[in-house]
Image (cartoon, rainbow over all chains, first blue to last red; front, side):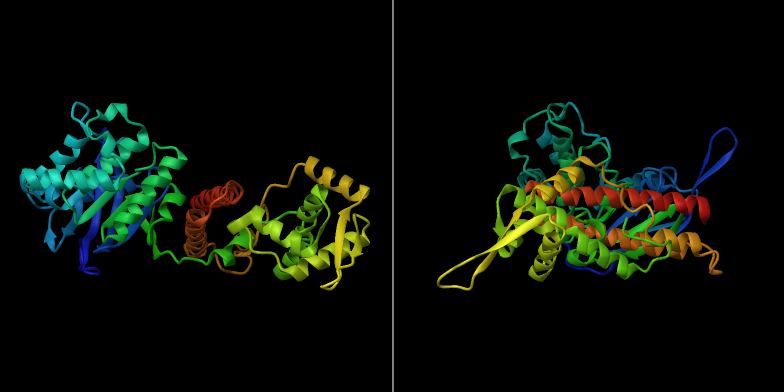
Amino acid sequence: MITDTGRLLLRTVSLTKIFRGDGVPVPAVRGVDLSLRQGEFAAITGPSGSGKSTLLHMLGGLEPPTGGEIWLNGERVDTLSQARWAIVRRRHIGFVFQFFNLVSNMTVADNVELAALMGGATRKQARARRAELLGELGLTAKADAAPARLSGGEQQRVALARAMANRPSLLLADEPTGNLDSAASMTVLRLLGQAHADGQAILLVTHDARVASGADRVISLFDGTVVDDASIPLIHPQASLPHVLKLRG
Amino acid sequence: MPVKGLLAGRIPAQRLERAGAMRMPLLALLAKEPAHGYELKTQLEQIFGEAYPSPNIGQIYVTLQRLERDGLVRSQDVVQTTRPNKRVYELTEAGHEALVAWMDRPSEGPRVRDDFFMKLALSQLAGTAVGIGLINRQRRHYLGQMRSLSVLAAASDGRIPRLLIEGAMLHLQADLDWLQRCQEELV
């Protein structure tokens, strides 16, 4: 449980990514400054090609930046060696992908347990953490199943359990509902909301406003730059509904 | 439909709409069986649940009077011994026809010319270029509404309210997509 709510967790300075294909440089992220505090739940939205996934991949160490700085828990991480960055990542970051990316020849339980072990837990701790997470996410009955036997929604729940196995200070989610139907999307969103209520800091990339509105704060990206970054006010339903729902006559 | 002139004020248009909004639901309820005003209020609440603000009893009586004036319902007093008499309404033939005609008619698409569209179209005339600020404020507002609807959806049981809320969310999603297009074209 993270109790130190409000402390700066993540900060980027002029973060930049330029892809070089056939000699033509394509800037994907152009000088992004953002920060996230402990316990915050922020969504990054924008049209496809706006750079939102590239930004998240840089923050998760999956893509090296072309320029700028990334600071995690007060430590500059973008200048770390590959090996050192990998350790920081396994200890402090959880990642959920659009296409689940579970290890297909391992059971649901082992997928989760392995992530806990890699995060530094002992065998006993990893088993306990796996049991706790599968219970919380309603997956206990599926513990011994192979991932391919599960529905998309269930696989994403396993992926969420795996991402949280190391008790990450930061949970990154890249279009986690992009491959799910409406009902399964809402379940994943509810579980993210629950994790957030327990103090988990979350940075979520989505093009779906219904998913983005689950966050407290929305960062809008356009052409690789941040065009808006604001906390989202909860408008009282009775105040907003008459404009949206009308009994027509 | 509700907006008469291009720049008709928002409040009169809303009032106009509110006055007409109750007519068809009341006719539909009376098509099932005669009822008095308070029963109609309760039934509306049961059908729409959290998805629609609870109707005001005064609004229901005013609408019933207008429906009677238009010949779509008729009423009679039922004598009660221990309580004041109550007025029971029933559907007329003309009321039935109006209800069927409304049911059979395709409905207008929503919000083609809304208030924000006016701001967007007129902001250049007013000397304030379409700024990212205008679009960002609107986006935040839509996201706030979306958030409220999510909260409401989680608190609602019953298929009809849930479907209404889901419909509203999909409309908002479309509004947000359109806002994105405005940003791409105009900013």
